[in-house]
Length: 212
Image (cartoon, rainbow, N blue to C red; front, side):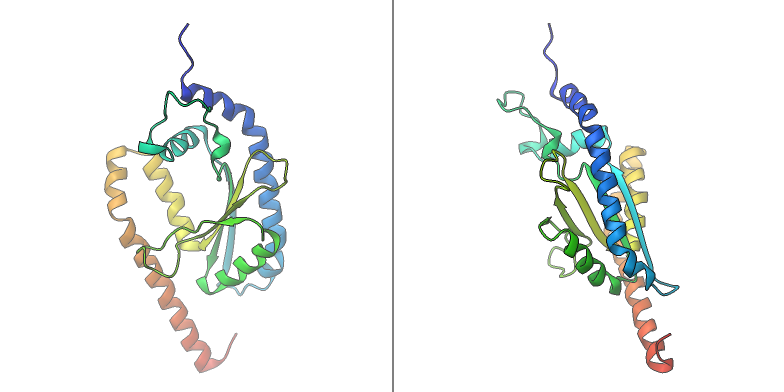
């Protein structure tokens, strides 16, 4: 009888974990929305906070776990079985913020709720950049949960771009995906420049005419 492959066993595990993943996703989104409601109520017409939640798909989770191994390969001789519970983002929430000047407030408010969660921010466009692309935290919604939750706070334009980019890179034509990846840095820089110019003009208008 042929031994079950690591990938097939992980697919079975995914099916068993799926109810717990959905529960963590629902709880995490609910807590984030509830905590941010007072902030959302104060937003000006041009300001936005967009919240979305997702459960990681099986065929995305397995390659993600594989990439974390030495040489980006599963060790077929490993004595301890691999588990998808090693991933910190099986259930996740993204919070997109516009303009970026609201990000510090959103981050501070959510840290009041998730203060014990570990931070692992997404580096900036250049490694030496002081500003990360996204503020990322992971932890457990309850001590007995076997599934980690993750939430990210990022500029809204980055959030929208990553949604489109994920569909193009992971679900589209591989040749197109490779070409798109070469332009990612330029796209992110252009979006940041737009945000910075918007904030500059906004401050200029407020200095001339006072706050709205």
